[in-house]
Length: 349
Image (cartoon, rainbow, N blue to C red; front, top):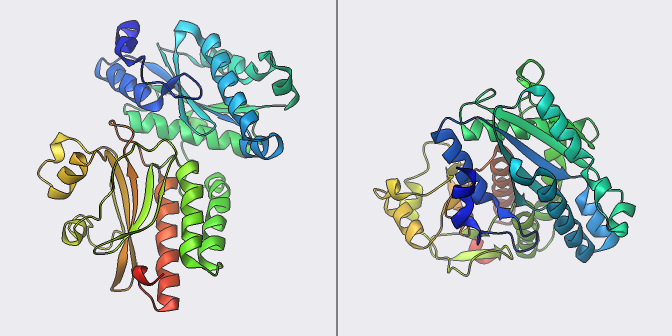
């Protein structure tokens, strides 16, 4: 089944690393779960990759990503499949019923993989990895659940000091709550500070919002970030891999109808044909927008507009994790606070 499944996916490669993009592995996991076939899922993160770019340059950083992807693919051979998740993070899927010892051996080999890369300049950079993994259906019977548990394991590894792997075990890790646990707080504090410094403390609100968006389209791999009021888009920022799709202001009344009560966020991991009853979602699908995370920019009863995060380069959509939603909501809240303080609307920036 594995070989047949990937036969028509060979053109969907990440341009830098020449391995599959993450949408392919998402589809693969859907196929495995539909067939009730067990598998192991892993996140692999290159530690402190920003420092590598800062110290050696982005060209060297690209070389590291490309060489590591090649080494990872050579290591796992036909036993599994690897894809670039985004930035310096990779995901892997290994079909089969892995016990703990088998998983431990595989993770150990991957952890030591940077030492086997032949390029001397990469060896001198002292690259290390952090891994987090979970097993289907042992740890969860849903794809979202497996990804979340692997994410928890990854963050636990980072809290332990990185350069390690964590295999999710319910008796050890079930109580980890990425929304409140100290490891999630530590991982998000830096991002919160970026948003606060740029938007609240900065002098030129429009330019500061643009700078914030430029950072987060890359960090979160968001194709398109912008602000919208009733008739216009502001501070638009596109990811370098964003498809050349025009983005239009969305009808206000249709937008408002999708926000339930005081919930400030409207999210769709994947916009599908099942959403055809919604004029708004049908319009987005026609515009080739496949996943959204929209946040109200509001204080009390004053609605300034919406912060829009759009995905248009992946027809399978994406899974918006709690950290994405949290930071985007913080961003919208700070923008609303600043607009209120300055007594202006989006169009007045």
